[in-house]
Image 1 (cartoon, helix red, strand yellow):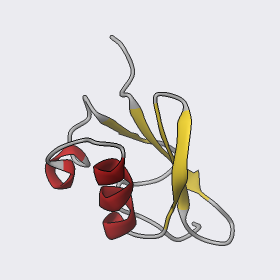
Image 2 (image 1 turned 45 degrees about the horizontal axis):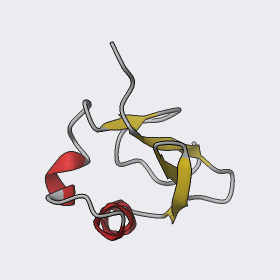
Image 3 (image 1 turned 90 degrees about the horizontal axis):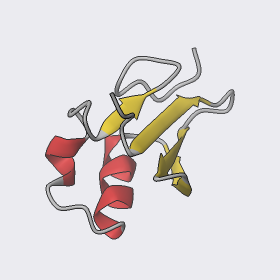
Image 4 (image 1 turned 180 degrees about the vertical axis):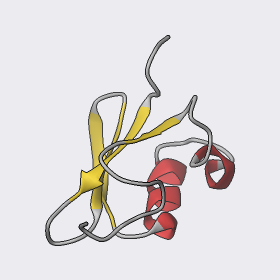
Length: 70
């Protein structure tokens, strides 16, 4: 099984999560809106639905949609 092309990395100690697509850093998201905007700017259509699709997005080091450091 191949891994998802978009990775939302573990929450940083100061909050927010680094987002990468195909190994390229898209930015530091602090909420779902930031993540959706990064994906939209990367040219991915329907980014609102992609964030919950494990074929597209892998959430690492924390629950999906959790933005604060644990």
